[in-house]
Image: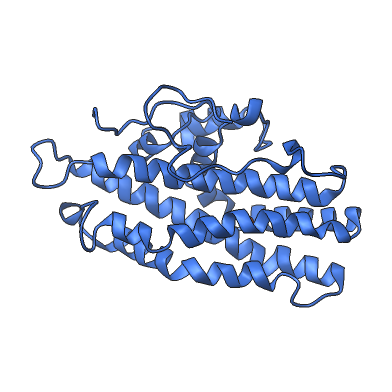
Amino acid sequence: MTTKPSAAPWADEPFKLITLPDGRADITNKEHSAVYCATQMAQVHNFMIRGLNAIIQQAPHIPTISDPNYNEQDVKDLMKYVQIWIEGMEKHHHVEEVCIFPEIEKFAGKPGLMDSPKHQHETFTPGLEKLLKYCKESSPENYRWSGQGGMEELINDFSDALITHLYAEIDIFLSLKTLESAGLKKCWEIGEKFSQSEGFVDMLYTTFPMVLGTADKTYEGGTPFPPVPFIMPYIVHYWFAAGNSVWRFNPCDFWGKPRPLQFTSKS
Ligand SMILES: [Fe+2]
């Protein structure tokens, strides 16, 4: 359950957040690392869902060129926010495909074991790339939410397939209880190290502010995820994200506290 910051629509809709497996009553043998991996994955997927929901809730309220309240910076920030959201997600899927999935298959001795989530990636990647191109190449005065070629249409093109995948992958990880627990955990840790080794400096300006700003630490009664040093939100807030108006679109502050969305019907 989410602690909403106000009665207004927030980033827990329209797409429902994933219930964390380690808190689900229907899941047994919770000490198995498959549950740990599935829970970590669900946390990450919830960042993505909150990010998408924050975009869907706020983008329709950004004034377009014909509106007297039009502000080019608002549109530029929205485009950049969407771009960082997509690139973060593509990185996540890249880490899975080139490291986590192969490590699990190698450990299980079953080539093709993780083909299903890999194939699911293909169902939404073309739509994500179209939206990424739109964000990078279209000029702010052409921005619109509704209608043909608007952002809504581009998001609708992939969002259901993406959400289906984000849910399905949790079940796939839960099904890995057939593997030896410690060995599976090792595969996960190799993936974490691999993820942190790529483009770390750039991530401080993009992935970190996005992750911290979509990680609701009050979710389901409170969660310490992501496990970052206590100083990290301060560093991001006062240095790497400082003065960058893109982060107005985040649904939480950098300490994981939900906050009202900035662009709503009242803005
Ligand atoms: Fe994933």
